[in-house]
Length: 333
Ligand code: G3H
Ligand code: 13P
Ligand code: ZN
Image (cartoon, rainbow, N blue to C red; front, top):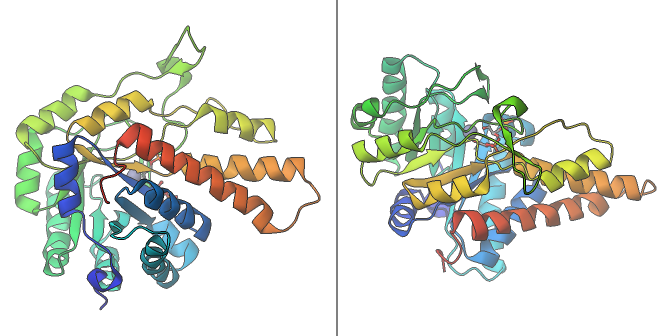
Protein backbone atom coordinates (compact mmCIF):
# COMPACT_ATOMS: atom_id res chain seq x y z
CA UNK A 1 0.00 0.00 0.00
CA UNK A 2 1.46 3.35 -1.08
CA UNK A 3 -0.15 6.58 0.06
CA UNK A 4 -0.30 9.36 -2.49
CA UNK A 5 0.55 11.74 0.34
CA UNK A 6 4.02 10.21 0.56
CA UNK A 7 4.48 10.86 -3.17
CA UNK A 8 3.76 14.60 -2.84
CA UNK A 9 0.42 14.31 -4.65
CA UNK A 10 -2.87 15.86 -3.53
CA UNK A 11 -6.52 14.82 -3.88
CA UNK A 12 -9.12 16.99 -5.62
CA UNK A 13 -11.11 18.26 -2.62
CA UNK A 14 -9.54 21.68 -1.93
CA UNK A 15 -8.62 22.17 -5.56
CA UNK A 16 -12.26 21.84 -6.67
CA UNK A 17 -13.63 23.96 -3.83
CA UNK A 18 -11.30 26.81 -4.85
CA UNK A 19 -12.04 26.37 -8.56
CA UNK A 20 -15.80 26.62 -8.06
CA UNK A 21 -15.45 29.72 -5.91
CA UNK A 22 -12.99 31.28 -8.36
CA UNK A 23 -14.97 30.49 -11.55
CA UNK A 24 -12.20 28.51 -13.25
CA UNK A 25 -11.58 24.83 -14.03
CA UNK A 26 -8.70 22.45 -13.38
CA UNK A 27 -7.17 20.83 -16.48
CA UNK A 28 -7.33 17.03 -16.52
CA UNK A 29 -4.83 15.90 -19.16
CA UNK A 30 -4.39 12.22 -20.06
CA UNK A 31 -0.90 10.81 -20.38
CA UNK A 32 0.48 7.55 -21.77
CA UNK A 33 4.17 8.31 -22.25
CA UNK A 34 7.08 10.39 -21.03
CA UNK A 35 6.78 13.20 -23.56
CA UNK A 36 3.14 13.88 -22.69
CA UNK A 37 3.96 13.88 -18.98
CA UNK A 38 6.95 16.21 -19.44
CA UNK A 39 4.84 18.64 -21.49
CA UNK A 40 2.02 18.65 -18.93
CA UNK A 41 4.38 19.30 -16.01
CA UNK A 42 6.33 21.96 -17.92
CA UNK A 43 3.07 23.77 -18.77
CA UNK A 44 1.66 23.50 -15.23
CA UNK A 45 4.95 24.61 -13.64
CA UNK A 46 5.33 27.55 -16.01
CA UNK A 47 1.79 28.79 -15.41
CA UNK A 48 1.58 27.69 -11.74
CA UNK A 49 -1.63 25.85 -12.49
CA UNK A 50 -2.99 22.96 -10.44
CA UNK A 51 -3.18 19.94 -12.70
CA UNK A 52 -4.79 16.50 -12.87
CA UNK A 53 -2.72 13.75 -14.50
CA UNK A 54 -5.20 11.26 -15.90
CA UNK A 55 -4.41 7.63 -16.53
CA UNK A 56 -6.93 5.42 -18.35
CA UNK A 57 -7.16 1.64 -18.12
CA UNK A 58 -5.71 1.58 -21.65
CA UNK A 59 -2.80 3.80 -20.59
CA UNK A 60 -1.98 1.45 -17.71
CA UNK A 61 -1.98 -1.48 -20.10
CA UNK A 62 0.12 0.41 -22.67
CA UNK A 63 2.76 1.88 -20.40
CA UNK A 64 2.70 -0.57 -17.48
CA UNK A 65 0.87 0.42 -14.31
CA UNK A 66 3.96 0.31 -12.05
CA UNK A 67 6.00 2.43 -14.39
CA UNK A 68 3.21 5.00 -14.75
CA UNK A 69 2.92 5.28 -10.99
CA UNK A 70 6.65 5.96 -10.63
CA UNK A 71 6.45 8.46 -13.48
CA UNK A 72 3.81 10.38 -11.55
CA UNK A 73 6.05 10.37 -8.48
CA UNK A 74 8.87 11.62 -10.66
CA UNK A 75 6.57 14.31 -12.02
CA UNK A 76 6.28 15.91 -8.58
CA UNK A 77 10.07 16.02 -8.24
CA UNK A 78 10.42 17.33 -11.79
CA UNK A 79 7.90 20.11 -11.06
CA UNK A 80 9.97 21.19 -8.04
CA UNK A 81 13.13 21.09 -10.10
CA UNK A 82 11.44 23.43 -12.58
CA UNK A 83 11.01 25.96 -9.78
CA UNK A 84 7.38 25.21 -8.85
CA UNK A 85 7.74 25.30 -5.09
CA UNK A 86 4.36 23.85 -4.11
CA UNK A 87 3.15 21.72 -6.99
CA UNK A 88 -0.51 20.73 -6.81
CA UNK A 89 -0.68 17.54 -8.82
CA UNK A 90 -3.44 14.92 -8.72
CA UNK A 91 -2.93 11.40 -10.06
CA UNK A 92 -6.35 10.28 -11.27
CA UNK A 93 -7.77 7.07 -12.74
CA UNK A 94 -9.86 7.97 -15.79
CA UNK A 95 -12.95 5.84 -16.51
CA UNK A 96 -12.39 3.12 -13.93
CA UNK A 97 -14.72 0.30 -14.89
CA UNK A 98 -14.61 -1.95 -11.82
CA UNK A 99 -14.14 -1.84 -8.06
CA UNK A 100 -10.97 -3.93 -8.41
CA UNK A 101 -9.33 -1.47 -10.82
CA UNK A 102 -10.18 1.49 -8.57
CA UNK A 103 -8.87 -0.37 -5.50
CA UNK A 104 -5.64 -1.22 -7.30
CA UNK A 105 -5.10 2.44 -8.12
CA UNK A 106 -5.87 3.59 -4.56
CA UNK A 107 -3.39 0.97 -3.28
CA UNK A 108 -0.73 2.15 -5.75
CA UNK A 109 -0.78 5.81 -4.77
CA UNK A 110 -3.46 7.44 -6.93
CA UNK A 111 -5.02 10.42 -5.16
CA UNK A 112 -8.30 10.32 -7.10
CA UNK A 113 -10.28 7.73 -9.04
CA UNK A 114 -13.24 7.79 -11.39
CA UNK A 115 -15.71 4.95 -11.26
CA UNK A 116 -17.70 5.09 -14.47
CA UNK A 117 -20.97 3.26 -13.96
CA UNK A 118 -22.81 5.56 -16.35
CA UNK A 119 -23.74 2.70 -18.71
CA UNK A 120 -25.24 0.63 -15.87
CA UNK A 121 -28.85 0.73 -14.66
CA UNK A 122 -29.19 3.55 -12.11
CA UNK A 123 -29.28 1.35 -8.98
CA UNK A 124 -26.22 -0.62 -10.09
CA UNK A 125 -24.32 2.60 -10.81
CA UNK A 126 -25.22 3.80 -7.29
CA UNK A 127 -24.12 0.52 -5.65
CA UNK A 128 -20.80 0.33 -7.53
CA UNK A 129 -19.95 3.98 -6.96
CA UNK A 130 -20.83 3.65 -3.26
CA UNK A 131 -18.52 0.65 -2.91
CA UNK A 132 -15.60 2.53 -4.48
CA UNK A 133 -16.25 5.61 -2.32
CA UNK A 134 -16.29 3.51 0.87
CA UNK A 135 -12.88 2.07 0.04
CA UNK A 136 -11.26 5.23 -1.38
CA UNK A 137 -12.35 7.50 1.44
CA UNK A 138 -10.57 5.30 3.99
CA UNK A 139 -7.37 6.60 2.39
CA UNK A 140 -8.62 10.14 1.70
CA UNK A 141 -8.71 9.44 -2.04
CA UNK A 142 -11.44 11.41 -3.82
CA UNK A 143 -13.95 9.78 -6.20
CA UNK A 144 -15.61 10.99 -9.40
CA UNK A 145 -18.90 9.34 -10.40
CA UNK A 146 -20.85 9.75 -13.63
CA UNK A 147 -24.53 10.11 -14.43
CA UNK A 148 -25.74 10.33 -18.03
CA UNK A 149 -24.06 8.83 -21.09
CA UNK A 150 -21.81 10.63 -23.58
CA UNK A 151 -22.29 9.92 -27.27
CA UNK A 152 -19.51 7.98 -28.96
CA UNK A 153 -17.10 5.69 -27.20
CA UNK A 154 -16.56 5.71 -23.45
CA UNK A 155 -13.62 3.32 -23.32
CA UNK A 156 -15.31 -0.05 -23.93
CA UNK A 157 -18.77 1.37 -23.60
CA UNK A 158 -20.48 2.44 -26.81
CA UNK A 159 -23.40 4.84 -26.77
CA UNK A 160 -24.92 5.85 -30.08
CA UNK A 161 -26.77 8.82 -28.64
CA UNK A 162 -26.27 11.15 -25.75
CA UNK A 163 -28.39 10.51 -22.74
CA UNK A 164 -28.17 13.80 -20.95
CA UNK A 165 -27.86 13.74 -17.18
CA UNK A 166 -31.26 14.06 -15.50
CA UNK A 167 -31.01 16.89 -12.93
CA UNK A 168 -33.78 15.25 -10.89
CA UNK A 169 -31.47 12.27 -10.18
CA UNK A 170 -28.30 14.04 -9.05
CA UNK A 171 -29.14 14.74 -5.40
CA UNK A 172 -30.16 11.12 -4.84
CA UNK A 173 -27.01 9.86 -6.59
CA UNK A 174 -24.60 12.10 -4.71
CA UNK A 175 -26.30 11.47 -1.35
CA UNK A 176 -26.40 7.71 -1.75
CA UNK A 177 -22.89 7.31 -3.16
CA UNK A 178 -20.95 10.02 -1.27
CA UNK A 179 -18.95 10.77 -4.43
CA UNK A 180 -16.82 13.93 -4.40
CA UNK A 181 -17.51 15.11 -7.95
CA UNK A 182 -19.91 14.24 -10.73
CA UNK A 183 -19.29 13.88 -14.46
CA UNK A 184 -22.36 14.87 -16.44
CA UNK A 185 -23.54 14.57 -20.02
CA UNK A 186 -24.49 17.86 -21.70
CA UNK A 187 -23.49 17.21 -25.30
CA UNK A 188 -19.73 16.64 -25.22
CA UNK A 189 -18.31 13.31 -26.38
CA UNK A 190 -14.95 11.58 -26.64
CA UNK A 191 -12.57 11.66 -29.59
CA UNK A 192 -12.01 14.01 -32.53
CA UNK A 193 -15.38 13.47 -34.21
CA UNK A 194 -17.86 14.93 -31.77
CA UNK A 195 -20.44 16.13 -34.27
CA UNK A 196 -21.47 15.22 -37.81
CA UNK A 197 -21.06 18.10 -40.30
CA UNK A 198 -24.83 18.08 -40.94
CA UNK A 199 -25.37 18.95 -37.25
CA UNK A 200 -23.23 22.10 -37.66
CA UNK A 201 -23.59 25.46 -39.40
CA UNK A 202 -20.90 27.39 -41.25
CA UNK A 203 -19.44 30.49 -39.57
CA UNK A 204 -19.52 33.12 -42.36
CA UNK A 205 -16.47 34.91 -40.89
CA UNK A 206 -14.14 31.90 -40.82
CA UNK A 207 -15.85 29.38 -43.10
CA UNK A 208 -15.51 26.82 -40.30
CA UNK A 209 -18.16 24.45 -39.02
CA UNK A 210 -19.78 25.49 -35.74
CA UNK A 211 -21.43 22.70 -33.76
CA UNK A 212 -24.72 23.00 -31.88
CA UNK A 213 -24.39 24.49 -28.37
CA UNK A 214 -23.96 22.37 -25.27
CA UNK A 215 -27.03 21.78 -23.10
CA UNK A 216 -26.34 24.53 -20.56
CA UNK A 217 -29.92 24.19 -19.33
CA UNK A 218 -28.98 20.72 -18.05
CA UNK A 219 -25.85 22.08 -16.32
CA UNK A 220 -27.88 24.87 -14.75
CA UNK A 221 -30.51 22.34 -13.64
CA UNK A 222 -27.77 20.28 -11.96
CA UNK A 223 -26.32 23.38 -10.28
CA UNK A 224 -29.74 24.28 -8.90
CA UNK A 225 -30.09 20.81 -7.38
CA UNK A 226 -26.50 20.63 -6.09
CA UNK A 227 -25.31 24.17 -5.32
CA UNK A 228 -21.54 24.36 -5.06
CA UNK A 229 -20.95 20.71 -5.98
CA UNK A 230 -17.98 19.98 -8.30
CA UNK A 231 -19.05 19.06 -11.84
CA UNK A 232 -16.80 17.38 -14.43
CA UNK A 233 -16.89 17.61 -18.22
CA UNK A 234 -15.46 14.74 -20.23
CA UNK A 235 -14.93 14.88 -23.97
CA UNK A 236 -13.81 18.51 -23.91
CA UNK A 237 -11.20 18.64 -26.66
CA UNK A 238 -11.69 21.48 -29.13
CA UNK A 239 -9.96 19.70 -32.03
CA UNK A 240 -7.79 22.65 -33.22
CA UNK A 241 -8.25 23.04 -36.97
CA UNK A 242 -4.59 23.97 -37.51
CA UNK A 243 -3.44 20.64 -36.04
CA UNK A 244 -5.93 18.74 -38.20
CA UNK A 245 -4.76 20.71 -41.26
CA UNK A 246 -1.09 19.92 -40.49
CA UNK A 247 -1.85 16.22 -40.07
CA UNK A 248 -3.71 16.14 -43.38
CA UNK A 249 -1.08 18.22 -45.17
CA UNK A 250 1.60 15.69 -44.24
CA UNK A 251 -0.19 12.51 -45.24
CA UNK A 252 -2.87 12.11 -42.57
CA UNK A 253 -6.48 11.39 -43.40
CA UNK A 254 -8.66 13.04 -40.77
CA UNK A 255 -12.03 14.03 -42.15
CA UNK A 256 -14.37 16.68 -40.73
CA UNK A 257 -12.99 16.42 -37.21
CA UNK A 258 -15.04 18.72 -34.97
CA UNK A 259 -14.61 19.57 -31.27
CA UNK A 260 -16.13 21.73 -28.56
CA UNK A 261 -15.69 25.48 -29.20
CA UNK A 262 -13.44 27.11 -26.62
CA UNK A 263 -15.99 29.77 -25.67
CA UNK A 264 -18.40 27.01 -24.59
CA UNK A 265 -15.70 25.59 -22.30
CA UNK A 266 -14.95 29.04 -20.88
CA UNK A 267 -18.63 29.43 -20.09
CA UNK A 268 -18.73 26.00 -18.38
CA UNK A 269 -15.58 26.77 -16.37
CA UNK A 270 -17.14 29.96 -15.04
CA UNK A 271 -20.07 27.88 -13.74
CA UNK A 272 -19.82 24.73 -11.57
CA UNK A 273 -17.61 22.80 -14.00
CA UNK A 274 -14.30 22.53 -12.16
CA UNK A 275 -12.58 19.68 -14.06
CA UNK A 276 -12.26 19.65 -17.85
CA UNK A 277 -10.94 16.49 -19.52
CA UNK A 278 -8.68 16.84 -22.55
CA UNK A 279 -6.96 13.97 -24.33
CA UNK A 280 -7.68 14.10 -28.08
CA UNK A 281 -6.19 17.59 -28.54
CA UNK A 282 -2.88 16.36 -27.14
CA UNK A 283 -2.97 13.37 -29.50
CA UNK A 284 -3.56 15.73 -32.43
CA UNK A 285 -0.75 18.10 -31.38
CA UNK A 286 1.67 15.20 -31.01
CA UNK A 287 0.73 13.57 -34.31
CA UNK A 288 0.84 16.85 -36.25
CA UNK A 289 4.41 17.59 -35.08
CA UNK A 290 5.66 14.05 -35.72
CA UNK A 291 4.16 13.96 -39.23
CA UNK A 292 5.63 17.36 -40.10
CA UNK A 293 9.18 16.47 -39.00
CA UNK A 294 9.15 13.08 -40.69
CA UNK A 295 7.71 14.50 -43.93
CA UNK A 296 10.17 17.39 -44.05
CA UNK A 297 13.17 15.32 -42.90
CA UNK A 298 12.70 11.80 -44.24
CA UNK A 299 16.35 11.10 -43.46
CA UNK A 300 15.68 11.47 -39.71
CA UNK A 301 15.48 8.41 -37.49
CA UNK A 302 16.46 9.66 -34.03
CA UNK A 303 13.15 9.61 -32.07
CA UNK A 304 14.27 12.68 -30.10
CA UNK A 305 14.21 14.67 -33.34
CA UNK A 306 10.47 14.11 -33.81
CA UNK A 307 9.29 13.45 -30.24
CA UNK A 308 11.05 16.62 -29.05
CA UNK A 309 9.01 18.88 -31.39
CA UNK A 310 5.90 16.83 -30.50
CA UNK A 311 6.52 17.53 -26.81
CA UNK A 312 7.00 21.23 -27.52
CA UNK A 313 3.77 21.39 -29.52
CA UNK A 314 1.87 19.72 -26.65
CA UNK A 315 3.44 22.08 -24.10
CA UNK A 316 2.16 25.08 -26.07
CA UNK A 317 -1.28 23.49 -26.36
CA UNK A 318 -1.48 22.84 -22.59
CA UNK A 319 -0.41 26.40 -21.79
CA UNK A 320 -3.04 27.73 -24.18
CA UNK A 321 -5.74 25.63 -22.48
CA UNK A 322 -4.66 26.67 -18.98
CA UNK A 323 -4.35 30.39 -19.69
CA UNK A 324 -6.94 31.07 -22.39
CA UNK A 325 -9.66 28.49 -21.77
CA UNK A 326 -9.71 27.15 -18.19
CA UNK A 327 -8.25 30.13 -16.34
CA UNK A 328 -6.33 28.00 -13.81
CA UNK A 329 -3.02 29.83 -14.22
CA UNK A 330 -1.59 31.31 -11.05
CA UNK A 331 -3.90 29.25 -8.83
CA UNK A 332 -1.11 27.09 -7.38
CA UNK A 333 1.65 29.55 -6.57
O1 G3H B 1 -11.95 9.09 -22.28
C1 G3H B 1 -11.07 8.41 -22.74
C2 G3H B 1 -9.68 8.93 -22.78
O2 G3H B 1 -9.49 9.76 -23.89
C3 G3H B 1 -8.70 7.82 -22.68
O3 G3H B 1 -8.65 7.09 -23.86
O4 G3H B 1 -8.89 4.70 -23.20
O5 G3H B 1 -7.82 5.37 -25.38
O6 G3H B 1 -6.63 5.77 -23.21
P1 G3H B 1 -7.95 5.64 -23.92
P1 13P C 1 -11.47 14.17 -25.46
O1 13P C 1 -11.52 12.95 -26.32
O2 13P C 1 -12.47 15.19 -25.93
O3 13P C 1 -10.11 14.73 -25.33
O4 13P C 1 -11.95 13.74 -23.98
C1 13P C 1 -11.06 13.12 -23.10
C2 13P C 1 -11.73 12.57 -21.89
O5 13P C 1 -12.89 12.81 -21.60
C3 13P C 1 -10.94 11.70 -21.02
O6 13P C 1 -11.70 11.12 -20.00
ZN1 ZN D 1 -13.73 10.72 -20.53
